[in-house]
Amino acid sequence: MKKLVIPFLFSMLLLQTACNKEKRYIYQVQEQELYQSANEKQTLKTTTQFISIAYSDLFGTTITNSELTKFDVALQAFGDKAVLQDMIVKSLLNRSGVQIPSDNAMRADVAAFVEGTYLRIYNRKPNEFEAWKMKDLIEKNADITVKMVYYSLMTSEEYRYY
Amino acid sequence: MKRKEFIKKGALAAAGSFVVPYILPSGRLFAATGSRKANHVVFCLFAGGVRNIESMQKAEGNLMPNMLTGTESISPDIAPGMTALPSPASTKLQSLGTLYKDFRYATGPTGHYNGHTTAITGKYTNESIQIKQPPKYPTVFEYYRKHNSPSKSALNAWWVSDSLGPYPYLNYSSYSGYGAAYGGNMIQPMTIFNPQTNSVIANPVSLSASDAQKCDLLRQFADGQFKAPSEALSNGIVNTPADREHLQTFLRTMISDVAAGVYNNPWGVNMNNDMLNVFFGTKIIQEFKPELMVINMQGIDIGHFEFTKYVNNIRLADFALYKLWQAIQSTPGMANDTILIVAPEHGRNLQPNSVIDIYGRYAIDHTNDEMSRKIFCLIAGPPGVVKQGQVFNNPYGESVDIVPTIAHILGFDNEMPLGLTDGRVLTEAFN
Image (cartoon, rainbow over all chains, first blue to last red; front, side):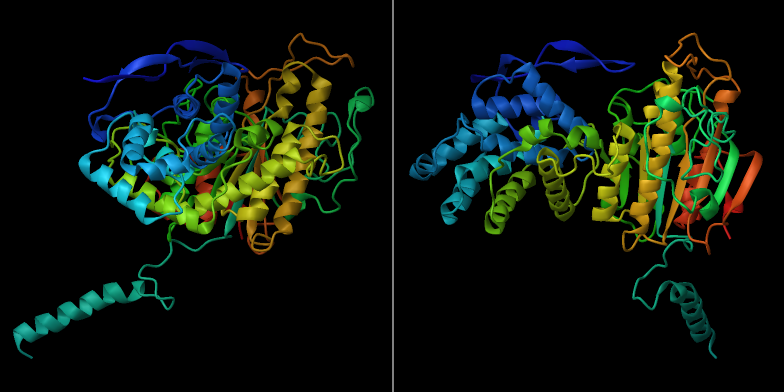
């Protein structure tokens, strides 16, 4: 099975809150196999996993502990995680240093862009139907940008799972 | 009449007698649940452990002059430790409702988490603190969202928590048949509404309405290809897409306003975290007009270490409570249609500990003695609904009664399953 070096999550540290001890996980880079299909994803990412992976997917590097804590604390403070995750992804996509293809590159080879994006975001190849449909949607909508595609996939249900 | 025709007509008549009462003039198929006392409830957990000796018995003076009648002055030896506050309200909250001066947190550890969990679930609990675990029994938010008819969106149910740790997890339970699908929105304003969070969500990708539509198209396609595993952990409560937009707009505006200093000292006094939590709670009231809000304060827990600050923080919490009441009464849709319930989660010990403050006063813990089970409860609301100026001086009512009482106010108490809560409706507070 083909392997990619992608950001993934590990090791842990203990965080002390006022009166209680709580386990927290800090994630680093490790090899992981590609998924063969979306259905293999059975586990919901924790808030720290979500942020670590999103950061790595967009910047190709591991998020620092201090920054991870900042994001994680914000996520802990609001009940509907999807609301803040959406806001965070929108913000990350607009940061300098984000490593995503240009709109011109996407338009030059939409099929390659779709496959590359699925590999990067979903850690799997699109199936035949997904590859065709996504390509079709992008080609039929000239105003769809790379950021819009990344934003949509990173706020999708599948991206919340591993 | 032929037998067959008789049976047919009889059956139609019988069916009609069942169906007709459920077709309402409004066109709704089913009647709403029982009649409501009011359309909004705000439950303020005046928490952190308040001893009745200082609150109801006024041993150090009337520390709650916005809630309680009386002009007893603060004990002179600790008076210099008190924060200057504006003159108290001329109409005391006590006179606008029913006051239980000897309410009880009857069983279970007198810990903040247990006290909160009991007040929010209506069920006594011996559970130790559950980090990142929801409570085992349904919360008042779930009862409301599951049993109120017609069902209401999560924007109508809010848990405004003054701290992180285990408290954010009190917005829904792990109880079978309830859970995140019926939970309330949870917010911990002091964390969300600060400049640090502003940096987390700053400078977002800007999407026009048309862009957003295209993104929805892409996402909907992607979602259609993925089936979330049913056994997966909950990702928290879920708002509708439209409500999520509303929430994002609200959060973004608040966060940026806070970063810009718009809410620096909004009440014109030196605000502690309790006051800030309540202030941000009032912004939620103004924005969403929730039917059910639970909000807490815990600054009073300084009582473990500094008695005089404990006393002062009771005063500050009383002031915040008054501001909460003012915000309710100045919010169209909630004014004169809201019942405010106030109660600490538990009390404090009769005997002090050995920690002494600069005024020579000993601090007090809360370790399950009889005094730490004595609390108070105030139910205030419109005169036609809540008995005004009524006071129960003797032991009457328990903290587990609050959830059934909220259900009674909002008219769904008869829909709740029997035996899930330990309490009763505090009917004596209502006309």
